[in-house]
Every structure is written in structure tokens, then in C-alpha cells.
Length: 318
Image (tube, rainbow, N blue to C red; front, side, top):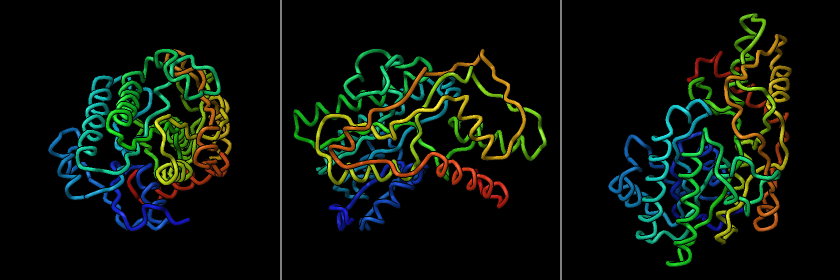
């Protein structure tokens, strides 16, 4: 379907990143030709000057804010101050400067890490304020949650059309496979492929394997974001997910099977499991703007594994 933003200017922060590239492709597929992606080398979105120059150069009517400083459990534990500051300051200033610049609509993409540690499963948007986030990623999660408050306040006081989306853990081709900062799926794929190719008899895995996660294929997430930009005009946050969870132990076994790794898994219970369970109620997105994820988990994993194996054999940077 042709987007109502076709023929209009759209700025996608983080548009050169993993999710951002998928969103730009989805916008272009729906007829949006005027997509502006401010690169961090040219525009420091942590500063008012960098933001103002990006808005002046892009002249957007729609802003989709995806830019973030992110990482797995290890990266969050090592950089709590940076993850809080950079995500909060960037988002707060960008929303304010976009409002002042006359942007018509602003899509804020938050994080599932904003949910309380012990949120009842499935996570419903109304439970966002029922407790404190899981400690290892609380600074990042709270920085993003403050942008929900800001967007709702701006909608109430200024009539600024801000929507807030909460995608669950993402995965897919083009993900970050750097062991120092990758999330669980690319980290496990890399470990299994490298162990398989080296003939290793085991891989190491963090935690106990008992925690559960829900995973959304990156192209499905992009479709949900663009659908919301097209159709959703409400201050209530909306989850983006598939509505099903898998334990980390089962995930490791699944990826090992798909990659052909036949060795053992050595669990390290001294490392944190993170949030005990994570699965979303996706009914709001389905009912209010028609989003339903379409990619099966096995198909998505196979595509991601295939991309990584091609990247390693072709010499393409991970």
C-alpha cells in the first residue's frame, strides 16, 4: 500500500543502523522517496546544534527516532551512565527541537527494557509503571521510558502528534555480531558457527538458560513502525512483537541445530540471566493499526544464519 507520507519529507534517525535500514527500505517500498538519514559523523544528535542542523537539512514532516546507544547485558553493565545519558539527552532534545521546527508527526521507538523486572506475562502496555526495570539494563530502559512521558506531555500541552512504540528483542540479517556488544541471537549464532567450523566440543553460554525472551524479525518490526506512522495517532504506547516466548536454553538448542553445531553447551550461572521472562501482549498494535508479525521464527533464524555465514566467507564486515 502507498503510504500517506509518499511525496513528503521523512527523517529517520539511526536510519543507517540495523533496524533503521529495514525501516528505510519499508518506507521506500511504500512510495516515500524523500527519506533523510542524518549520519552520526555529520550530526551529533546529542547536541542541540547537531539536531537543528539535521532538521534544517532534512526539512522533515515526519521524524522516526530510532537512533540509540544499545547493547546486550554485558554492554549495559559496563556502560550504565553512557547508556542513560546518551539515550535520554538525544531523545529529549530531538523531540523538543522537532516540535519547534513544525514537524507534523513524531514516532518514538522505545524498548522492551522499560518494562518492570517482574511484569506479568504477557506484558501489557498498562503494566509499564508497575515496578522498576531489570537492574542490568534499567538505565537504558528508563531513559527510553522518559521519552514516553515527554511525548504524552507534549501531546497534551502542545497538540504535538507523538506516538510511542515498544518493540521486543529484534533479530535478522545485518544484525550486530560483535561479541562485545551483540544481543543474544547474533552472539549465539556466531558462537555456534565458529565452534562448528573449528571442531570445538562445546560453547559457553551466560546464565542458567531458564530466562525466556520473545524475538521479532527486523523486517516485521519495520513494517509495524511504518504502519504506525501511517495509521496510529494516540498517546498510548503500543507493543510490537509476535506474542510468543522461548527460553534461552531452548533457543541455544534451536540455533545449534540450525547451524549444525553438535557439541555441548557449558552454562555459566555466575553470569546474569537478565529479566526472568519477556513476552508481549500484541493486541493493541493489531487492533489499532493492523500490525501482525508474519515471519516464522525458524525462517527468520535461517535467514540470519545464512547472512552471517555469507558475511564471514565474503569478507564483509560483521
